[in-house]
Length: 388
View 1 (tube, helix red, strand yellow):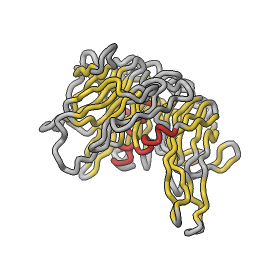
View 2 (tube, one colour):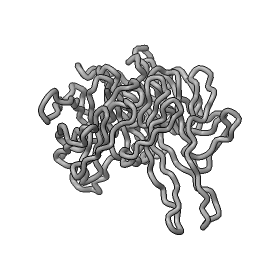
View 3 (cartoon, rainbow, N blue to C red):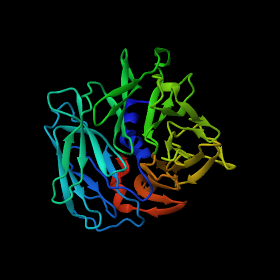
View 4 (cartoon, one colour):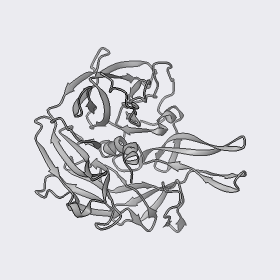
């Protein structure tokens, strides 16, 4: 697990547990030089240069989506960044929010509020802000939270469904390397904090995702490591007195009969887990008597651990290299309360002259039915956090 891999999934995992079915609008943060977008129910993502008229086919609600964190190439951190709030029904910008620095991470609660960690110019600390959609007018409300500024490197943030608690998974330095091994949960109202740490003997492992369950007390933590303790998705009771990060109850190993996974996304009700086959060389396994392969989206029962292939994207034959080219699916950027609805982004291989091109596709998987959402294809390389 590399730092880049961690960061490419950060906001997606952070928000997966905060969304209920039929709820939601997106906060999209830009690559350098691009505008951000926050879209609402019935909306399509767009930038300032064009207005998309596409609408949601189902009431998927809103999505807060952040493009992969900008690499400023050693240049100064921007003094401020502005995000657009766009109506997906009209494609028009409904409101904007300006934050005082580089927006590094985002998350959302289930009450329609969004949260951002912001690195300010001339500072090496992250400060935290709440973003509320305006009741009228075009200026969203940005409020500094009482959460203490953080001076380390944050990999993931996740906000409890009621917005009362902010969880941060952070890096711990070991010589020349660092892994995500500490967890802090802070009250957004008072700033009071609790911390969970990883014993030094487990220094080669890393947190690969966090998400709140609907109860606002349980935090799902995916732990990925080359040795003991075994890589599992664990459920951490944040109200229990234990301060050991790995004290959470193990639910499902990341390496199991269906194959090997880097992490799992869990439905907010805690009953369904979803993993994607992202490693070109596996390991693969079997689900419902079918061999799994690259690109498969696998569902697991949290109670029994039984796997099912929820979605299998297409593959094409590459004549030039006489080999099969498989699609690649990312972790679901949104999953409904029961897990029966999820948003998927996959790159499909398509012949392009003598080459094979990877074409992004975004879709809603609704009780097994695939609904294409082409106006969201721009999120293929991004990260997402959803709110109501």
